[in-house]
Image (cartoon, rainbow, N blue to C red):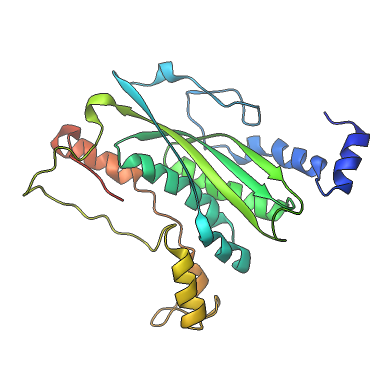
Amino acid sequence: MPSKKKTKAYAQAGVNIDLGDRMKGDLKESLKGASRPEVMGAVGGFGGLFDLSKTKCKEPVLVSSIDGVGTKLKLAFDSGQHKSVGMDIVNHCIDDITVIGAEPLFFLDYLGLGKLEPKVFKQLISGMKEACAAANCALIGGETAQLPGFYQPGEYDIAGVIVGIAEKKKMLSGSTIRPGDLVIGLPSNGLHTNGYTLARKVVFEKAKLKGSDLVPGTRQSVFKALQAPHTNYAPLVQSLLKAFNKGRSSAFRK
């Protein structure tokens, strides 16, 4: 626990330790529903704990990935809507390991910002919690770094790490793909988290649209359309793996 003198010194430098501690203290309640029976201990420690002995794989292989949201964040800064960012970072990471046939186990996030804003923080946590719960993935830990002077006011960066598990003999590599194989296409709800630097240039600079404008031919705003959360394909893919060829599907590609 930092001393009052140390806390005051940090506050004068732009780091609100007390606020950070309060936000951290609320996580236990905020993250209810985003856990699994294998999780040991509570969120907030220096290391998240997960009991692998409770998994059912005969030959378990851990599958990990790390990613960010990219310049899609700029839309959140402009619109003030941040929940979708939390969903984006989780679902992006989940989909990266889903293509290998892995089931998500747990997720950790990194949030770097110049100033901790409770409203923004709560929206991000809400989005991550909702996405993790939908995928039966535990939000097991994270890091929130207050870095005054490093980010523009109102801006932040976010990254996520995911660890999943796959049965060694059922992992997907694409090596068994053959001419004549059935191809199943899964629909997308938008750009997900890719190509936003180009999309923003086309929409806002070339087409001269504003975020509050309606997308031509729809009743949906530009902000809402572009901020559609990254789709979580894991539940559908897991169902397909079980239904087709007893889990011996050849490959999935994002």
